[in-house]
Image (cartoon, rainbow, N blue to C red; front, side):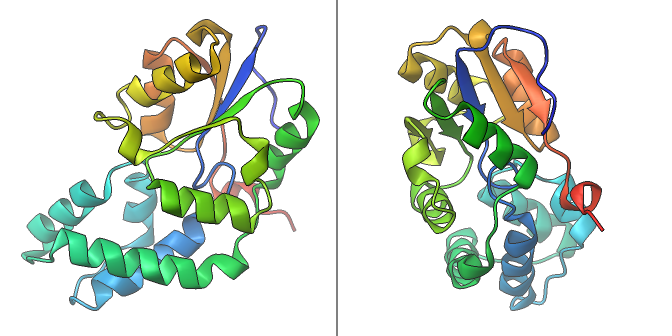
Length: 198
């Protein structure tokens, strides 16, 4: 189990993709195919480096650096459709699942994701975890994406817990920056290649 920082925590806030759901390898396959259909390459190291960024920002930067004009909405719809096809392969991140199993029923949980509610719900439903969360804060619920603290502060308010009594589980630099800006402690979830056990 990932060690918690010191403190008395009254709420756990979880990012979804790459944190609760070990979905980043599946998302990468979906992204790679979706942009590949437009003749765009998307190296895996760049995909992980851009973790936590919004879909329109990613497509805009790929367009700018590759000299392309991929339509963001169309690529996003295709990417999401491909991801949904891969959902049966989805598993939970074991080190985070251990915290969910350990604290469920004692401490309220929220999912705080940059993903769309339908996508996050589908991932959590596939994992059989949707009912563990008291609150979901997704892309539709706020205006400023991570590293802005807005989403985490909304979750804390929704659970009725002061920010300093929340601990955030996150896998990206942007997510950790957002948690820090919200005045919350955090646990860094390592990427798949650092978690892989023999």
